[in-house]
Length: 256
Image (tube, rainbow, N blue to C red):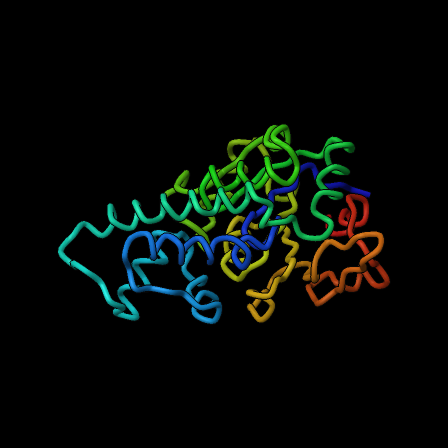
């Protein structure tokens, strides 16, 4: 059986439920620190997640919802960048204190992939600091070096759903699209991956379970664990996984 040479991972919602357990809470703390009378509910945040990038999300919220705001004459890019930096600090503190855990099957799969010499990379819109904080506090600081490439934040001009971050990863790693499997969790993620012609596995979460994942080869609840079976939800290649309760490296090569 042909096998994938590399796995490219999204972070937020894919490696961990960072949106629900981390970013939303951190945003609201940063708003309070800035003296803004803003508070994002879970329902609103789910809607705002259609906009990738924290700074971009705040600007979209200001433009669409016209919330209380002190001075529209200020440089909004600089202002929201400063709030985003505070939000990132709050997020890192939460991760440091164990508030964010990896999703089922992630650690198991990463360790197996390393043992079988599969190449690992991260392609995400979140900041590099958020990525390394999550990895360090869930898998140990040494896990940062497990990933050949961490393409994060503003490393490319256009964030997901644009395919830039995946084109960048392929170029930097010297890979062709057919050699790689992407792990994503959202509509923007599948659009980005498919824009680079990449085979894509979707692991849904509470915020994205109702997204349109057209084109995804496999859609599942999570990767599963020996004592906690995953659920197959759909995908163009879902029939190849009938009866599978947990995804491992060999099983996922069926998508090759």
